[in-house]
Image (tube, rainbow, N blue to C red; front, side):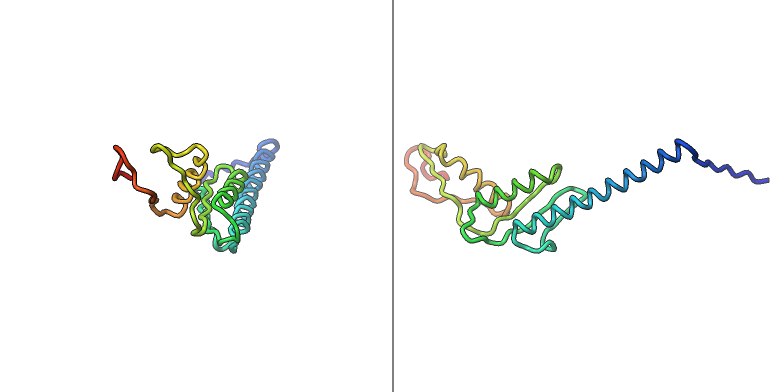
Length: 149
């Protein structure tokens, strides 16, 4: 003799299961829409095709190399990255700027001049995005710091 037991959901249980399945499918669709929009937005601001945008959906990271735009500064590319990042909550956004001149950095008495601190932030951001080391040049120092740079 074999006995098989089947559980058949009826009434409220069946409705709850249907609602949960519908909600799960809606969440999946919303996530797909968010990823598509993110890819399109990054491609648009970087001046590249959507195929040039790299997305890691499991780690929620998006990266793209921007093409040079006439007259665009590092501050411009930084602002573009921040604009996309503000809309892509829980994502890490990295827009790699093209190779352009770094802004000037003023140093007085061995410290960055306050008016120049924003430029230092941009230089550090660009270095992080491009993955190249930073170097500084300028007139030789005198006094106890001489030869250290």
